[in-house]
Every structure is written in structure tokens, then in C-alpha cells.
Length: 105
Image (cartoon, rainbow, N blue to C red; front, side, top):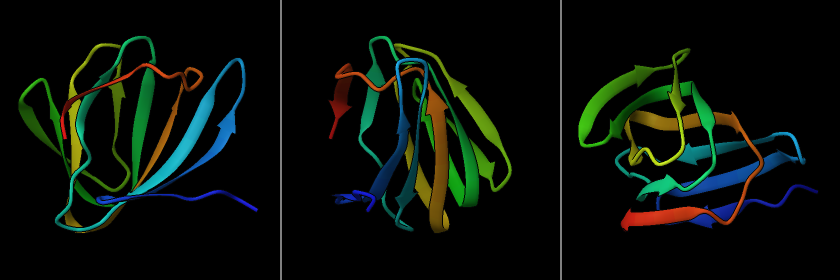
């Protein structure tokens, strides 16, 4: 059984978390957005599996469509908003740590 974490903006499933890497899938509900945050040490890349998102990085907006990816190194402030349909986002990176800093809820 897979544990699904629920959030006001959608949900996430962590499907790999080892000493070498981690991976998760999350769904952002259309019209919702994740918190604005950064990771102190975590390095990750996101891949848009479904939908259209607005990725805000360091205050600059970028539209990503299904099939596009974006690298998010540590300390880069970012958030994701689902613009057209629910967005399904895959994320892979360094192991998940308790290093999230929420900039804006």
C-alpha cells in the first residue's frame, strides 16, 4: 500500500527514498499552487507528466507543458501552480531531508 499525503493544493506519493536518491509524484489541482519554498541541501529535477504549470523561480514565471523538465538546485526559491487541468509532476533528486524552508504559505 502506498501512502498518499494530502495538501490544500493536491497530493503527493513518495515512491523512492534511498541513501542515493528519492522520487515522488505529486498532483497540483487546477487553480491551486504549492507553497513557495526552497531546500537547504536537496537537489532535484521536475518533469511535467500531465497538465500545464506555471513554475515560479526566484520571482520569475515560466510556463511548463507536459513533457518538459526543470532542474531546481538547493536554495532556489520556487512554487508550482496548475494552470490548465490538474498537473501531475514527477520529481527525482537527492534523498529527501527535513530541509524545506517555507517562504510563503
